[in-house]
Length: 319
Image (tube, rainbow, N blue to C red; front, side, top):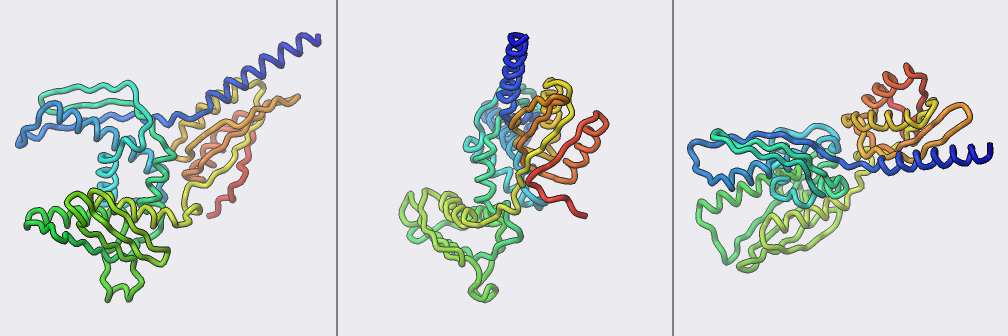
């Protein structure tokens, strides 16, 4: 009898270990897009293919970002974020699989599973001010110094500045408008291949340099928003405890179900499984995207199956 209990304990322990290993989230995002051919612009197939794949990566990143960002972005800022992801997607993607690219006369279709590095993506969103509330008043000063631009290039440069202002949630201000309270970002073309800039604000003063306005902008405004304490606006963390199963198999099935509720929770990770004399219980760590939606899912799914739950470390939702 003792030997039987030892075998049973070993099997249960091994089963729980498998559950815990399987609980590590992969954050895979399946994307399918179609990029049509512009009949008025002749583009090599290789270029069109690369552009389509880049758009697929950007779409995957935006899908994950939209689950993290509180509130709703304007149409202009949404487009600016997508464009930024298309330019810097390699920084936030840990891999991909099952990529299928099909070329046709009217365009390119791409299907791909993208593994998103949510930690680096979240840090980038914070540095772009996407967790901040409201616009930040800013004076923008750009000097080309000894490298003046012709009218066409100057218009292009101003458009780039406007795009960055939109992307970072800023509102252009003047000395008169802000009465000295606005942040001041100034950047100058210091040498043929280098730009230098500084950002002065009530939060601090930072200096930076890079090979473009964009790189200096990312560095300095990243420091500005990175210094902001916005934990209260980011997805709160909680522990979900569920009990009432008769065997550990139910834990695995519910864990799979929980991960499909990605409109309500993110970063789902199984913490432990406990075998009690009368029932099995388990706990998961979660990031809550929408507390109301999560509670609705839990109340609809668990009690009808004879299961009970509690959310620990999360304030009760209030109307």
